[in-house]
Image 1: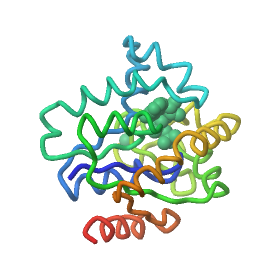
Image 2: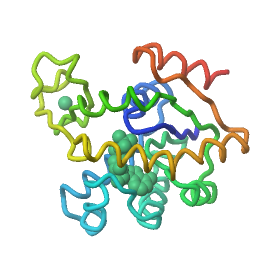
Image 3: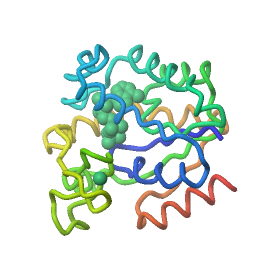
Image 4: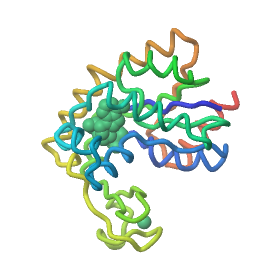
Length: 207
Ligand code: ADP
Ligand code: ZN
């Protein structure tokens, strides 16, 4: 199964992707995670991407398309993939159709007013990359899953979040229509509990 997860920042794509990938034995490919790790190790891609990522702008299409093409050609993608964070523009979607077209696109829908608190309260584990909301944490600094150190992403600062939501609405939301017209869109309500959303995604995929 070749799957794309679409939806605004904070919709829960990363959390749900982890569960669906376990269920379906396909690799979870998060372009945000790939970029953050490239930035942390100061690779050429990381150096190029840093200023875009930190201000909530999109990294240029050609950087992402090359990165995703290389990743999808690795052996573990032979049985499919789950892309989280890519494509984010119509140009990226057209490129993906030429690399390895998705079978289905899950669109996780959450209202903007809920996204703000999800993103400002989000913490990420330096060790396992897990994401958590402060409302569920006993200790804001310790990963409940592996004990690693939690931090707040630079682009989860309130002043950057509005920028990311604007970028989503102008550049990424047009993909909803792109994939609807291709007959691949599976809309899912992203506002329930994590368990409810997982169940809704699995129903949509098996539908
Ligand atoms: P989000 O929580 O917004 O879904 P991600 O971790 O997916 O965050 O992405 C973080 C940042 O990485 C984006 O704001 C953007 O700067 C960059 N990025 C990730 N994927 C892409 C992409 N497909 N195209 C351009 N930029 C991207
Ligand atoms: Zn962890």
